[in-house]
Image 1: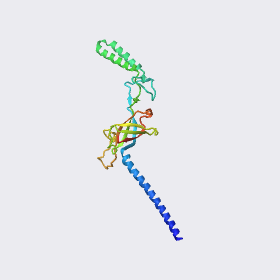
Image 2: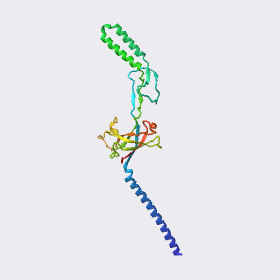
Image 3: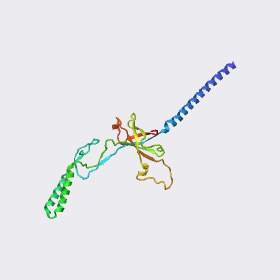
Image 4: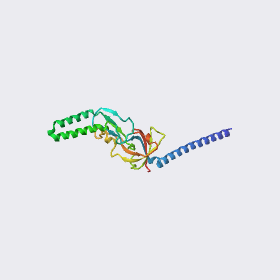
Length: 241
């Protein structure tokens, strides 16, 4: 009876020992896979979620003031070069022109001065009739001007260079993947260009990792029209390219 009990105990011990070795081998295998992944894949990529879509926004400002009598365009409308945006009420400028004409008639003795006033008045009314002036600022985004500004940590850019490929994931469209290339690096950190840059020469000092803006050109894509300036982006740079 004692021999049977001893045999069962030895069998249970051998079973537990096999399970222990199997778990240990699995952990060792996962550790080995993790090390291999780091050395052959992970260390060749740098990513940041501190990235946003930008565009070359052009602000249209009026050269003269006046009441808008007709707003030709609407918000988010596509416009072409030379297209009228709004028309101003030109009656004030017409009155000034008429006044200038009267001055010309009354003061013929000062002919040179009168001719200058007339040219000035005609120039003013010509601007009023052009009809391409708005009463307030308008923003225009040129086609094909979209790009991504990714703010990488200063410790991430050691192996980055212009031309490297970048994978872009837009937060608004997680199922879509865009590609791009590094176009340029900012000449200074983002904090340097702020209105109140940090001054580390006073009082206590806490070291903060700085961010370097990196401009990324977006490659053409069938879904490029979905990208809007200001969208959040996750950018991953392939250091092997």
